[in-house]
Image (cartoon, rainbow, N blue to C red):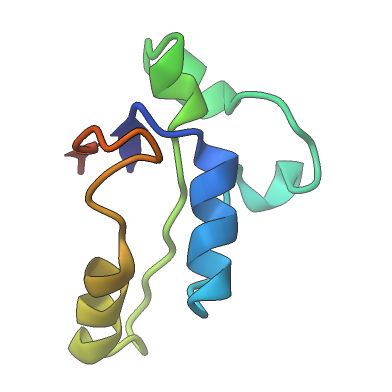
Amino acid sequence: MIFRGVEGRALVIALNVEGVAVSQSSACTSGQSKASHVLKMMGLKGEELLGGVRFSVGVFNRMEEVEYVLSVLPDRDQGGQRIRRYF
């Protein structure tokens, strides 16, 4: 998911505090602090690369868990600007 106007790393930390396990990179590149090569190959640039967050959902996740994640996602950045989400 891409969040324009938000640094992905900050969003990952905020969601982790709420008990939501997300990442800014794939499992094979976890721990590296560079932009996702997958997002680059998709043609994303600039703030789109910085606002990428990876959510993993599987067959054992319940709808209540998805609804919880949506409820704790911030609607505004630290400057008060509305966050645009791209699913």
